[in-house]
Amino acid sequence: MVRLRTTLKQYSHIFFDLDRTLWDFDRNSRETLTELYFRYNLNTSINNPDDFINIFHEVNLQLWEFYRRGEMTKDVLRVERFKLSFERFGIRNNSMAAKFGDDYLEISPLKTLLVPHTREILDYLFKRYKLHIITNGFLSTQQIKMKNCGLDKYFTSLTSSEMVGYNKPRPEIFHRALSAVHARKNESIMIGDDLEVDSLGAKKFGIDQVFLNRDKVKHNQTVTYEITSLMELENFL
Image (cartoon, rainbow, N blue to C red; front, side):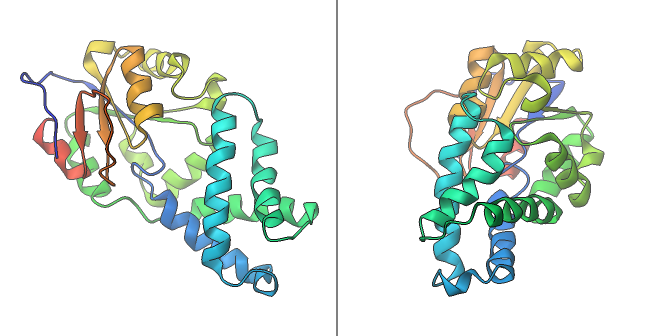
């Protein structure tokens, strides 16, 4: 599905989110957590990896929301998400949670699974536009992901919330990303999988948006374009 303007605009700069838009966070995270589940012998306390993974993703989502709002620091988030996940299964071991968190951040960025059609669409867009990343993820982690997946060669710049001190959807991070590459609002567009953080954040800042709605989630917001597959970008870019 593509919601199109009646008149297509001419863009020069395309800003992408990374996790779940290009880099398949869910599948890469699942692989990593499964490996660590067995490495740490969690099977003695938790029936199967899926039970642990589902709880972790639930807890992680909640804590990332605190981080986005500036209510939690990066260092606390890195440990707390595993500490709280373990506690849901009656495991209270802060030192293990800290070590588990370190191992997760070491292994996960090395995974290379991408959202379907990522390479095809980047090959297509790279020849036509300047491409950039705007991410709320940890800077060093995101850089490792992009290098290991071979995505870094496509992008002119990477702006992270750590660099700016503000997370998407705050306008400050969009301002920094555009200013860094001398991009004007009317020639820029933001592509991301999170309606509130990516699309509505970009909309409030004043640039066009593409909502990558792979799960076809129903909503009542108005966005510039809405797609369910990256390949649909070829219809208007």
